[in-house]
Length: 84
Image (cartoon, rainbow, N blue to C red; front, top):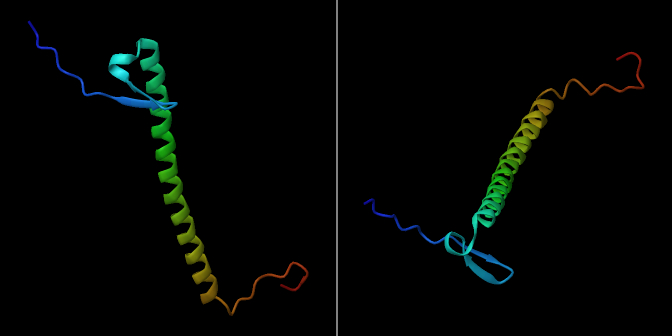
């Protein structure tokens, strides 16, 4: 006879009530919990990516500013000056 492995409790607090997902939830509720967990994981991942993209964007802005500062002898194009 196979030995049944004991599952670690997965505790969810919803509206001030604690639930053990493995013991207290039926199959539909477990599936809904997994959807919520997956959505939360995606939100956290996207927040992490947003931080990375913000830092990367700041870096590219800084590099562009440095490049423009190096080429100060070439003034920006004035749309009103037809001789540019």
